[in-house]
Image (cartoon, rainbow, N blue to C red; front, side):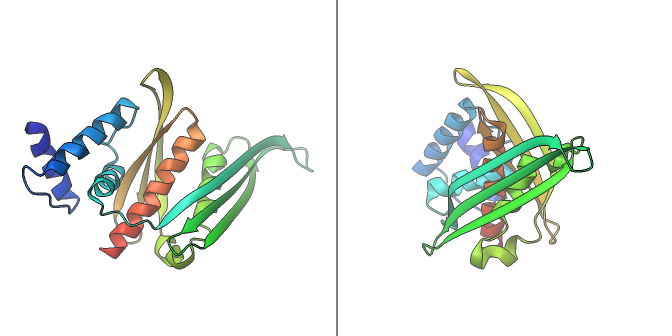
Length: 202
């Protein structure tokens, strides 16, 4: 009962009202526990928690679905003999109207610029072309990126928590989990855009 009470409080903070005793509260609690067993942590990622809850309640619009992504990083010397890391990313999504969009981004930077690598390339490619949503995501800025290796189930997994903000002074955090750090990051990046679109529709 205490668990459901705390859950209702968190839902209220997210603008979601669910009556006391509603069976869906139990389903949300069960889903949260399942995800936490896999390595997710929602205390520091309220936006991802809200998306999970709304999905269980049938209140999450299907803005877009990621069909595929590819990211490549290459360390080499450029024409000037400098060691650089080149990151290239391609992301293909299907929008809710059935149309497909592909975003592409490529950068080259000195090897010591760790914040401008494959995750940034994926982020830029993901938000390059989301059709009718493009103007609504243009002001999203990534402000912090935290990585932790944790045990999810029977294997070690990477948990990534990313903080964002926009021009409306809104701040939110999302979480992604995967054995692959890039895949975990991409999950958190995708959640960030979905949360932003959801809030802009409210």
